[in-house]
Amino acid sequence: MCTTVIVGDKASFDGSFLMARSADSSSLKAQHFVIHPAKDYPEGSMYRTKEHDGATDFSYPHPAHAMRYTTVPNWKTGLHGAVGFNSAGLGITGTESIFARDDALAIDPYNKETGITEDDILDVLLPRCQTAREAVALLGKIIETQGAGEGFGVGFADDKELWYLETGTGHQWMAQKTPSDVYFASGNQGRLRFFDPDDENCMGSPTLIEFAIKNGFYNPSEGKFDFAAAYTRNDERDRIYNDPRVWMMQKILNPSLEQKVADGRNFDVYLKPEQPVTLQNLKDIMRNHFQGYAHDPYSSGLNGSEPWRPVSVFRTYESHILQVRPWLPRAIGDVIYLAFGMSCLSCFMPFYQGLDHVPEHFGLGTDQADDKSIYWKFRKVQTLAMTNFPLLAPLVQAKFAAHEKVMTEKQVAFEEGFVKLYSTDEKAAMNLLQTFNESLFSETEKVIDSLMNEMFTVLTQTIEKENFFANRKMKD
Image (cartoon, rainbow, N blue to C red; front, side, top):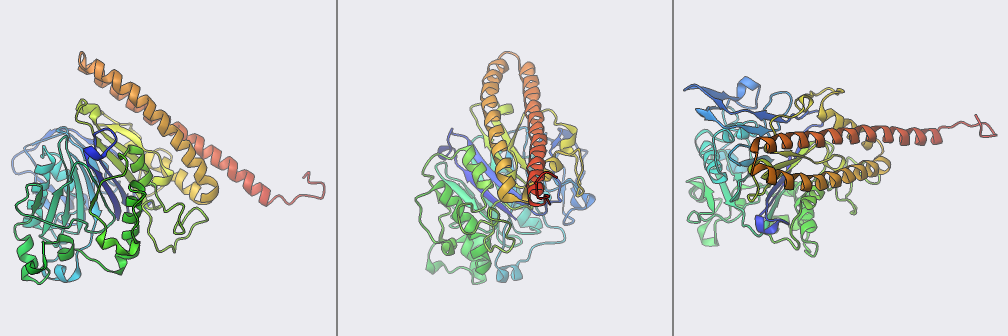
């Protein structure tokens, strides 16, 4: 269960393409950052999900020449890569779990035996696809021929375009290019609406409209074909689980917008933001838990029965922001800002596309707490803070906010130096990138260590005050 925001280049603060998403399942699902090197495969070699204990028995041919790419998979299978860039500059975030209407699925069900799922998407597309449009078309073809094993939405970015694809039923899908001057926000529901097969900015399965007409999900006499109306679930579950998140995201980026949460099906798919969207805006969205509203489940003490599901939940195992800046060398122009664990109690660290390697413990971590993995370093901070959110969360948030500000200032200086050096000595520039990025990782871990000590100090003082059992002279 996830939350997604996509921002066109003319809607962003600096002309970059932006995509953000949280990934939510289990707080015990440790995440790794993995760099997959370029690789040649023999003819007939196959990618097989089952070999990694994946969700289905999906298989697909390996490319003869696989490009280098990155993913953030879960610890157990090494699958469900979540987010990554390849060496061609294609970035993908996936997936947003979405739900088709039950009567449509009864006719064209998900292929839960051999269909493609979120486990596979990045590991199939990133090694071989050069552009967002190419990746959308390939994923669509796989859905048509092999079927989707579940409902999902996927975001695609390159240095020219942003796309978003949603499944309908097991073999039906739609994708749309995000207009450059708007943003798109989604929370576990199909959001794409009007599909025009003659529009080059739309793609979809060949029988998308025909299937809907044949089975009574669309009547052409009633107007334009509406993908969400024809294929997507829309009932009381969406009113409290999905719609409030979309309402909140649109409120953050369009503060003057007045709309009722219960009217979620009619929220605009695309909106022009009132101010250019910044990286900080997207961090704030990923960290949002309805703070300042009556539906905040944390700030006044934990309320696990709150009916509105916030963006930031404890079981978020990572959230990320992809940024594409076409005017810069790709090594620094493509960046993933990654926050391990619960977003509102985590820190977004930048991972430049040109990274040659990451620290070993960024690839460690299981479903058992440890003292080495970067995932569990963050998760321990979050778990401790959640024992007294009103007292401890402000400490965590203030320290991570200050650290992110320092990192941003250092990035500006580093990127200026990198561009100058890259034009004369590419190798030296790439060495500089590696050293700089690793230094940010190291500094972040020092902040984590400091936070743990500060929180334990505060908790010790608090517990002592509440359980002092003093004698009448208050001395011992």
